[in-house]
Length: 114
Image 1 (tube, rainbow, N blue to C red):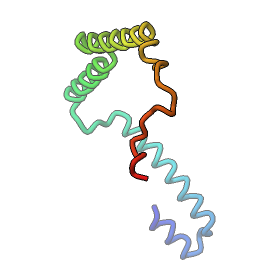
Image 2: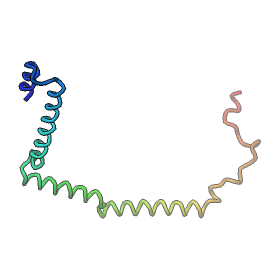
Image 3: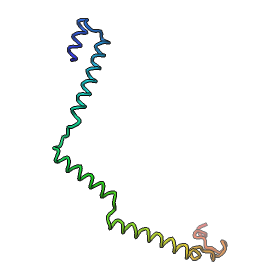
Image 4: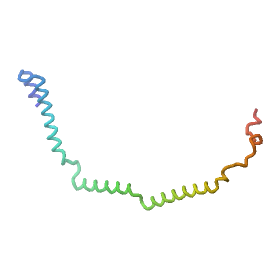
């Protein structure tokens, strides 16, 4: 096609603008035909492709649903976190040190270095 258009332009049968338009039309037509042909194409045999698709679906499904062990681990983690929060609330006064001596009586670690 290209050689034919180039020959027609050299002979003067076509202008460059018309040749480009015809080339663009031919390219669009070729593209649509190739897309139509490639719709059913697969590099793998159909039986193998079906097994691959099934394996992929099973893998995705297993990722979505946690295993029983995973659910137990998550439940235990949440329970530990909740228990820790309850203990902190119940024993909050123990963790707040209000019985510290005034700032003058505190020992400064580097007071002797001066």
